[in-house]
Image (cartoon, rainbow, N blue to C red; front, top):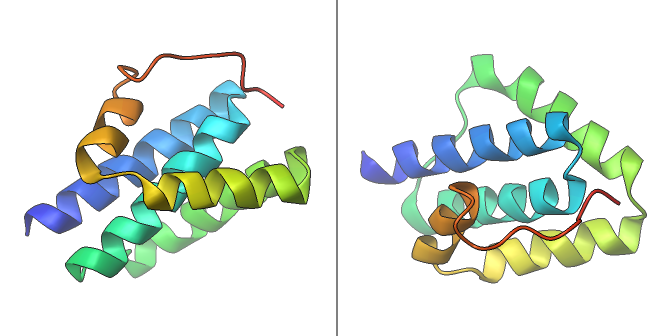
Length: 98
């Protein structure tokens, strides 16, 4: 299912962003992945859940709650094309590490 592949890629990109320290961007991509799952009937595979939870916890613990929730909402509001462009780094990076 194409929806599953896009959701997996958005989650993977969010995880990479969290490891690189671009935490607001990571939260945005996690929000986009969550919304993509809801809209397309995709789901995270059980073996992927621990890594997802670990990266999400890193992001949530590293930025304040309001910034985290705002970024997740922004990601959830992105059209799929915009979320994919963001994941590919085509949406312009700013200093979003905090």
